[in-house]
Length: 169
Image 1: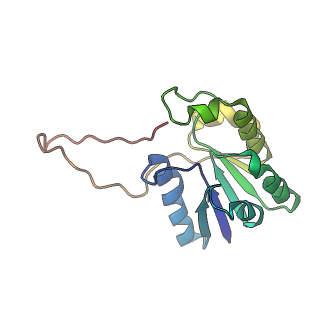
Image 2: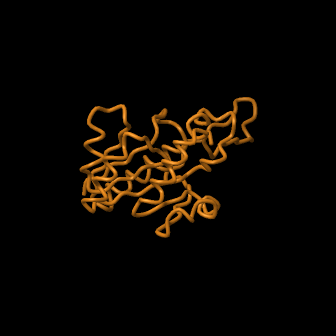
């Protein structure tokens, strides 16, 4: 099956992309036979891909330009999944995505997409508690790393290992 996996533009080494997109996508290609495409709206053919892919996963992203394609999918019984992996109504002020998420239109679009999706998925139970009312068809896929990155000890403290297990949000 052809699957389109969309998320906001990012730097590929970002935590969310690794454990919410790259590693699960890689696993799906191995066990489910999926052909996965990861795109954003900056690509000229993305709107057509939104309309035609067999399965669509919108990972914490939405844009008003997507609405006709999403309505087309619904009319043609092509499923789409929406993922909420951050509290979009309470983004920290220092987060680079704050302006996007504080915009009332964007919050409305997120709620619309979550409600209209065939499945609403979350990255943790707390987000399901906050936003589960948006769609009765829901599931939690907790964050986790499939492959652990190599660790590096600071040169001055070989007995100390410091790690960061998160992302900007």
